[in-house]
Image (cartoon, rainbow, N blue to C red; front, side, top):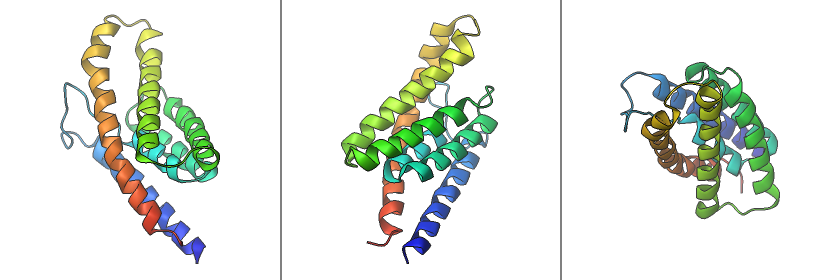
Length: 169
């Protein structure tokens, strides 16, 4: 009986990632705030990894990373590698050491969204040697980090609902 609910839950997560990819990559569908759109797949992978154990979290992180690399990134492999490793360790930490709560989810979501987007900015703009990196960061990336984080809070509630209702207790 448990296996059936697990398959439904994983199917719901996969469908969520696919719909978020479509929503994120369709032009003029999401509003731009201060010149940037959110990366919806990033917080989706992180919130899934908060709830699942490390292996499913790793595979959903890898799927979200691949979709982000295809639809957003010009550094193919960046989000795939970083999200795969991040989601594996988040799943491991929350399975063994931390309790899933809104506060813990908020802290991890903000920490990982901010760090991964800053790391992406560093690899895409700073290390390449593009001009006006501080201007571009302050006018585009700060709003993208905040927009992604706020959307991630909504995705946390969605994924928690899916996790609680699609499992045998």
